[in-house]
Image 1 (cartoon, rainbow, N blue to C red):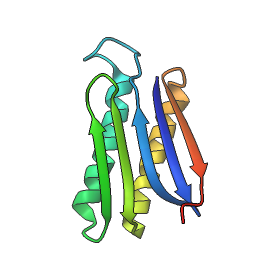
Image 2: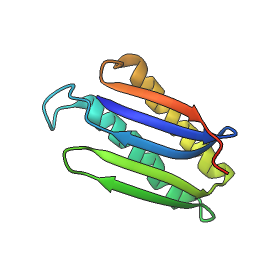
Image 3: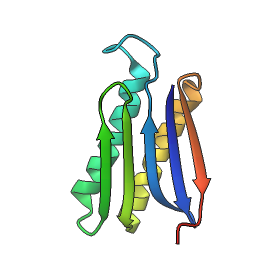
Length: 111
């Protein structure tokens, strides 16, 4: 199962963690995994390409764990719009494939 964790502080997305594999189908044929990967990498690339003021850190482990963590270091309105669009897209996938992806949104106080 793919586990997505969104960490917010006062409604601002501070961190996105994606971990695991959907196991919906065989490697190379898994539409859930492909959809989640396309959404996550597409939106992170959009943040990087379209917002010159944003600062973020990303770590990924593309081995068997399928782990990625995005941390917002200096948030902007553009970044938040794109990250919230990513969350909406992931929730859409979760609505249709809830046996293969779960999303948890946590509100925390980081400062």
